[in-house]
Length: 408
Image 1 (cartoon, rainbow, N blue to C red):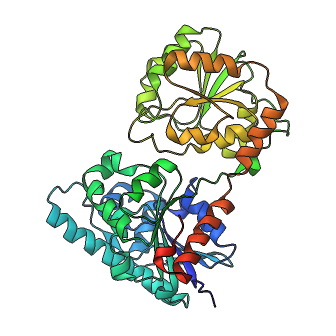
Image 2: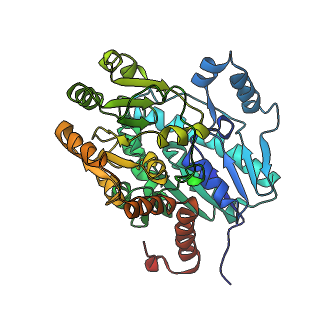
């Protein structure tokens, strides 16, 4: 009889309570349709306590870290969220590797002690659970030592080892964590190729998108802050960060094409706030929007863009916003990266100012109805259900066949 896990344990990077869009949260909900699921928040560390102690959220998190409250909450009939009764040392600044390794293991030991307690309270056995680790590379190094689950999966959705926070210790620890995993799942071919360097059982499972709210054929009212902006509107929707987006490209496009209105929708970090874009009359910053309002903004843009920089952080990144653009039936232009090629022929890919100018000019031409429908169909096919089915397939093979027979 085929083996089945008792539950899925999701070791997450983001707290459930913050309700931020995250792959781990979406996957937890999808897993819970067929399995019991425990979503595990990251442990609180000393630095976070100091920074957040004056906030209600910070004080509540500290109480849970000290065991003064309900650490495991039921979200639905098959989904629970656990906040560890543990306080971690803030150690990422340490450059002395042996000391870092000692304290990292100590942090991990406390994390898994709390997690095992939660698993026991739910009446499960950790050796019958599958762990799905959302890029918690440092904690993940000790999953098999301190939890000993039925299977341990590692998930990569971003090239985190190129981020300054992760680079020093992550570049040496993540390969070890990948190697120890029973299988590795990624959301792009680029990241799967990277993972395969350390673990043959590495698979690109694609990316899900909540396209339910993005319905191209539903007529949305034009937002009041977008309405005064003339056409053609060339728009970007998402977090505005200079680490990932090409500010210089946007500035050059705006300066060379006065008739184009560059519309930027989303929160800004400091590089955008201080950029010359704020001094250009045909560049419009509309700020953050409630997620449910985004379809109305996208619908009333003429062309949607994703002007990524090409660097180690972005080259393997799966841009979820492309699915949102396409689901709304919008003409889309994006920087030509390996991760973007999967969207061909539904997007225009470009490099540099001249490439973007040509691609945007093509995208402004009247849209073919059949091509529009094909774009919508492409976006709608990228579901969390499809991602999870690929995970289940590998899980079944690992549990019911010889390791040598795994097909990735």
